[in-house]
Length: 106
Image 1 (cartoon, rainbow, N blue to C red):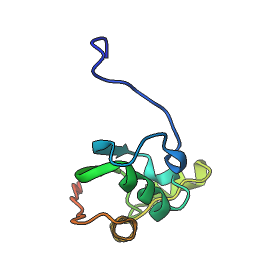
Image 2 (cartoon, helix red, strand yellow; image 1 turned 90 degrees about the vertical axis):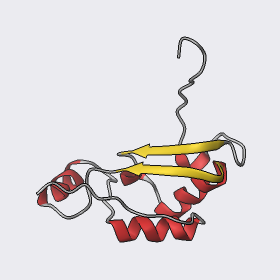
Image 3 (cartoon, one colour; image 1 turned 60 degrees about the vertical axis):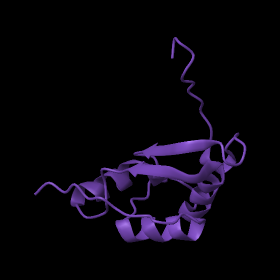
Image 4 (tube, one colour; image 1 turned 90 degrees about the horizontal axis):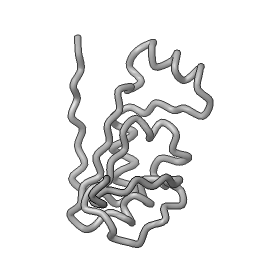
């Protein structure tokens, strides 16, 4: 950051302040739980992602454990999506080649 190679910006996914095809890589770490309308938000991300670019989503919660229910009860507006819901929203938003990698600890 000190070298000017990285800039951190804060914005709502609903109103991204970037031009079409701006990024090769867009990340969402533990944030899609708060997207108002998952497919619509993913459309906005698709719009700012360059052709051939990557949208990388990392979620710890997957709606499969009772811990997930606890978080939803404590945090307003939190929705925990499962892999099928996320893949469907990505496809609906225009992303292709979407897949899920699971690192489930047993």
